[in-house]
Length: 483
Length: 95
Image 1 (cartoon, one colour):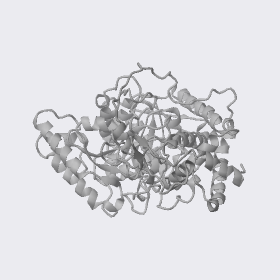
Image 2 (cartoon, rainbow over the protein chains, first blue to last red; image 1 turned 90 degrees about the vertical axis):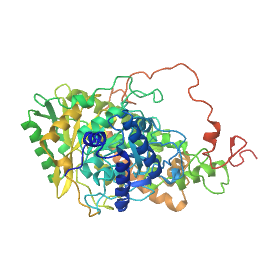
Image 3 (cartoon, each protein chain N blue to C red; image 1 turned 120 degrees about the vertical axis):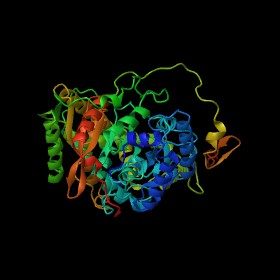
Image 4 (tube, rainbow over the protein chains, first blue to last red; image 1 turned 180 degrees about the horizontal axis):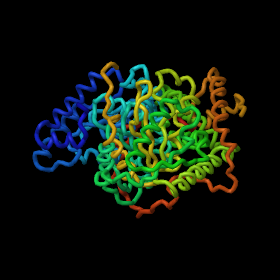
């Protein structure tokens, strides 16, 4: 029996077959049973039980929405009022926000039941979830392997059947790559579609909130709840939210899918390339047309991203000064010592590395050669996509070049780790929406197919993914309990 | 891209990250490798290309200048490790 979809869970709740309180208890019990995955930093049982009781009462009063009573996890980057929000950093190990992120408010309002805060790479910087002050997360498909990152706890929690969906954030692939590694559907919306208010900042021109779940239709339902304009985020898009659920039934006939040859380049494992090509063949069989395309500046995406993201990080993370909130060192000798020692103690190695690189790229004498040049490449990359979308509706390729790698395999080599993002970072530089969906297996591990759409075409992405999932069952495969 | 220990100390100072002497050499080696990676950008032809700072090229919205949140002084100050009399406490700045 495959895990139920969100719509099926809502149906079971509506028919009285199950109560929200039962779902919450079950999720909490499952989280404890799978504690070895280290998917959670904080579980919130009291709050979950209270929210479930509220959801059951709302349903009894005839005020239930599509997510009322459904348990979920937040990536611990979304501020939750009264619940500590760590961003997997020692810096914020005791930080209890006095307010909710917009995404948290909206899911609360929709009646979804938070059961805990999921582990992640510290400040969302990483591709394996090994950079967490709270320990690495394990992949439910193979506990010796990473779940991907940075939304690794979210992905592991859904893949292990703890929650049916989880929030994530994606700055360079942090929703899509863990979705690919854990056999899930992961949606990164258009930049500005989901409010960043209360989502702890990493690189503000790239950060994007989104969702991980089993099915595209589940993602559609959650996106409908979290998308929309918010005055508190000046970059949130002031345009109406499409009816994503209604769009799901669009047919594939006539759809033009651009197959980007750069996304199948060196570094893409044979088994991954083969599974993705087979998945594309399935879409072709269902009426889509595959068209070979080129994205000539794709090879510059990683270097440009690793200038821009660290530059923005160095500026965003300047706020952690040991004064207003967060870690403060003991016995500071001076104000300067307070700043630099609090930060050195509070941040982990990868975060420091990116702050230093970003500071360098923005410093006098190097700004033009690094930051400004990277911004010009960013324009070239966005132009490549715009040009491609004149001839195709979607762009496809493998989400990640490999399947989930072993814990420790790349953690000593930042450059090898960065290469895991080769097919995902360009999407963030251009601000486009993209989805990763389960496309098969290689060596017994899940492979992800990435589809990229023009800005605000989430409805089309979800529809194509949904169609694909009606004809395949990769997204319904579940790992055993060996982990 | 070659750095020297003085450059590493300078960057760490700008970033306000305490860096013990023993860590300077390994951090220098690591930064040099990263600069080789990002140096690959030099291969791109960017002549005449307008820099792109943000995915939204539109102008940011303006709003009326009015208070949108109430006074949360006490709530926010409570997050600080050290505060006194309504102020944040830091080591003495003026001798």
